[in-house]
Length: 313
Image (cartoon, rainbow, N blue to C red; front, top):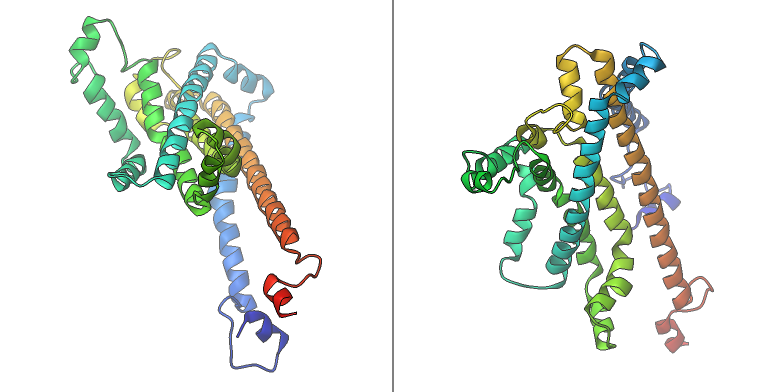
């Protein structure tokens, strides 16, 4: 007995749909959600901007245009612009291999992809210090060849890559598994080669999920604190990213400057949410368009009978 049939027949009183709740429960759940959103998300966001602008626009603009703040912005962008494309290549490759092929070590690869989600970012930073630090495994060799990784930009980039590489892969793996590999196999049968299959078959099917993963990866890369804090050395104007610069300003009791720089990260978060919502809307519209096209092809929208009904007629 379907829910639509029950709703269309009010006389059926002994059957209760699981998704229908009383008004009291619905209002309570909505009120709890709004309260949580207001206390833990909206009010802190308002506090950041209000504190940033408390002393006026002149102080705000001076804080974000300071030489050390500009250097922190530049380093944050450099780390993100290197980490995101590398994670893009890895994420697509890993998702394609996991979803389209069967091989030994497949489950182990999935476990490795999830590793940054289960390891503290601080621990990840300490791992790089252990490997590439002055007293680490390769410290002596790096020092002899005048190569600096820890307390320099390469270490920050490596730490950023580590904490962000699961986002794109984890977004694409379930999507590509759900789509299957029939279309790729059909393209190969028709004579398409590897890159042709990817550009003309795989990529159009995953483009919205891929963009969604890139947005999340970029947001995490620009806002990363723990792992970067360990490997950066906190050298002002050289190895401080925006989150680290905010921490230094706050510890020095420069609250207006700290909140001014923090507002840039808050703006980044808002922009990310807007782009994320747009991507979700486009992906949903794309699915609806494809579904309507498929329905039109089988003649349902024209009130034509199904194939089975045609044969009976």
